[in-house]
Length: 433
Ligand code: FIX
Ligand code: ZN
Image 1 (spheres, rainbow, N blue to C red):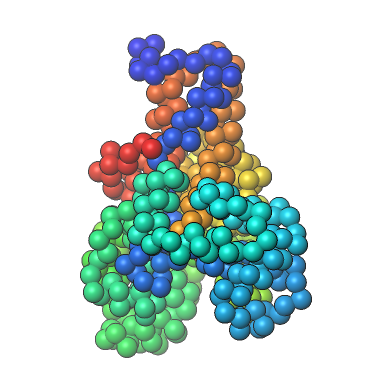
Image 2 (cartoon, rainbow, N blue to C red):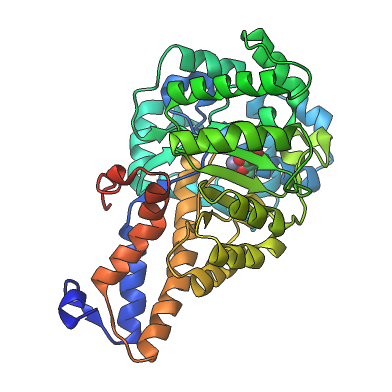
């Protein structure tokens, strides 16, 4: 790169300038949030926002179970507003909100101008009753600097599938991702849904079932126009696998992804229902085998894989695997990893091993306003990790320019994902905030 190239932005040689400019650019660059559980208001009850939903987030449900004597059964039977009151009292009034999930709520309330030190939820409830879902989407996307979010779209969910059958939602800030967990992880359940919808599947994953499952997936791709297909997988996932899941991945998912030029997103390492009484809050984590991912990438070079792993212990191996396979894109610090100390560690090892060729984070937001804490928290850790890398480059004798930093941050926050999903036309559409 010539001096002229670099001079398309200010050239930085002083470390304090590098840190300040990196923090500024990271704070100002628009995010394309590539995995959430958010929905536009047109999805009715699936679209979650507001104080009661924020406080009954399953991360906080797990925490209130440790802080009170209320049993999961008693908690489940309470109305949502009473659950929210209990959580507020136990985790925010009678305790200091130190955990990531509680600190997040404090940040959301502050961002909305609500006093987070109140002893009850009256002020918060008044704020939310004075606005609408639509207005709140505009406000939150704007303040979080998020240009678009990718939903998690489940064709096996009856409520959701009926909404899709009525037509694609009009809000272009919400993109689709076709989630196929039941198809791959619970064939006995999935085949009943398929049969009921008129697909002639058998109990075995035989030729006919494969053809019909393929027809099902093709039709849902047509209906949703997803940016990728996705599944969460347990920590004991292996490849190749002699199972319904192995057959369906090999003969349905991988060919479909090739034909439609879609990546396959695998979220590996979840142990579902470790404590079933806790519902969504009862899932756990296990260390998975990265060699399964490597084999998939090696045996299927024409497929592109987006991969996130839930166990902290798998992160370094996943980076090394991505160095070997350019059809592997590591993404996000998923779920129990989305804590500042771990985001910092993972982002640093990814930058050191992969440069700017990964997707550092997704929010996994389930409730709209969570974008107002998950992204600022992540931005801060990503900015610090990046600034240290740039400082190292400058210390080694090469200046960096603000134009280069802006380009790298755009890659990390939007372009890597959009290019990977073959949606480079959306790259230019993602505005800076
Ligand atoms: O499987 C997933 O997409 C997970 O992210 C969720 O199911 C999980 O409950 C969650 O919300 C994690 O953040
Ligand atoms: Zn998720």
